[in-house]
Length: 200
Image (tube, rainbow, N blue to C red):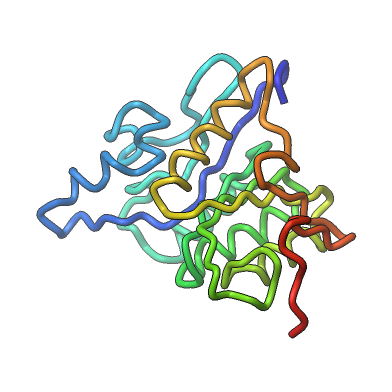
């Protein structure tokens, strides 16, 4: 919300591996690198990083723990989510169990949540049109605030949209949920009005 200092957590898969030759090229294209304006800040950062006036980034970072032990990574990112004021998640398909787990944890803590996802017209179990419809709705049911679900036609547009949504937090006119195709998903089960839900 404009006027307040937001500390954001930005979830989503890292589409790069430090063992691969194109590691740096892919890392620099990650939406969080673009947000931070510095790939090294995403790779080796820690703590809270200022993004703009009124907006700071708390994680995740790529090399965020010594030794990169699995349990340490999970515990570190749990602490980050606990410290954020607004959690953003980029979902492309159902193959992101870490991101889904983080979403549910953020919802259980009552954090403000925005989920930007890639719409799949072949997915008909929910009006959200994504194989990740279940965790999105689940988060809206257990959280203290509604989940803002924002559909996009492809991954490139999803990256662009999540950056726009994040940057709007420090503007005089932050993006509202419920416009431009987004929907507030809460205990009332709200879904986009133009795509009626299918029965399971």
